[in-house]
Length: 271
Image (cartoon, rainbow, N blue to C red; front, side, top):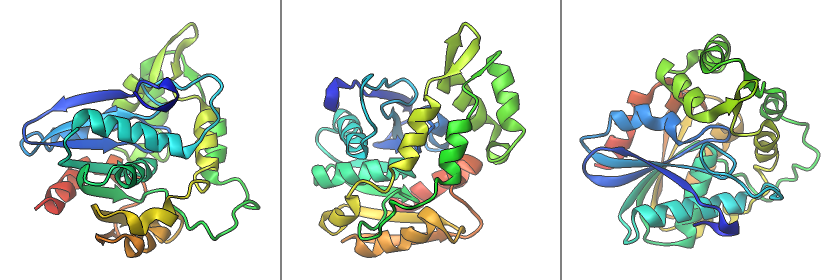
């Protein structure tokens, strides 16, 4: 159980070996990372969580988006999976920030975190005058319903960014990210909730506590020279026990485009 009496959904993907927690990006959910887990079933027992307002985890009706509560969700999931520590974490975008928050609050819980372009921004930069980002606009315009699951799959597969995703990722995104509704199927993650999460991504103060995190962290960035990829090496510099890995041929959606390569990266970093 997380804060606000939120019951965090945790999905066990099987496998053998030490526990691994997969932590998803904004607007997605844990099952989107099942193709990564499938490549790791001989090395890890893999789990994934759904943050509040995403996938199978509901959010309080009157809850305003607060990134610190996402940290609560990550911590609640991690403690359920590995109450005695020894956990490996892979966090993508928002999910990377959530794992870093959890590691700060519970030292010793994680043996390693692989954070792919985590959403952690310097707190000494005034972003109050920023124009709405393309991600915010896209979230608010996101079509909330379709006639069927298959219609949703066809729609997403036909246009960026999901036309570059592995086909299994798109089907899992739709299959576990939509629910039956009178009009056909409807998104579980409300477009306004997703948009507000993007809008408030610079509001939390995780940047300030990065030097206090002793967990070994591998910060990964794709080849985009902007946004989370631009900040990623600075995050690695502030962490006490970290390394930075650049994947110039990748981008912010790398884990969805190349699940096998992401799995290989996790294995390489644990050796």
